[in-house]
Length: 275
Figure (spheres, rainbow, N blue to C red):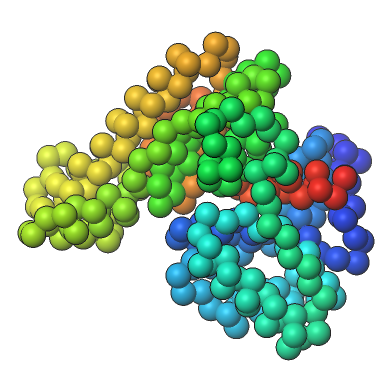
């Protein structure tokens, strides 16, 4: 890729464009620094805990990347965390004399056709990831998007950029919590490793880790096989999410992309700005 292919323009040359992916566990932030062949260029990534993030650290990061003005594009699946983020942004704006604009990203602002029964009810994170995958896939190929986070989703995108839907199941930490909440003796395992677990597990904890680890791997592989059959074309498979290591190496020719959701939010911002 030639450097000349990169546009460093944003909506306002004096304004820093910031993307926010508000998830159930983490709030992921990044600066949109430019556009390369229709895809956003991301830099200065920063993560916050969705349930208890450090407002002072966030203020320091925000002032370091946007000392004059900022525009936030927020895509959220966790309204409480999104409201907390927006309150913190407003507090920094007031205390540090920072000019700020905030905009929620809606499904209708993503350049992808949604063919599910109720498009407005599909998680914006799933749609953003699917949008980015549809841009990254080779021409005339469909996409399968595996997002391993608090929940695990496997979604299908047709070669003509139609979001077809997919499957959702609990992620590793949620499965561990469900086992503990639904039984009287099983503990909640907090140290769920991403590496291949031992089988057989020789303690209760290691048995839970084996069940969750191999269970998720098996479920995702089976769902990907089924998705391949449903898309009447060759497909590219993309893997994202904080727990992606739990299925890493299980699917051939998968493309690992930790910023897939943020990239989709960036595509929406590019569309809104008309870049």
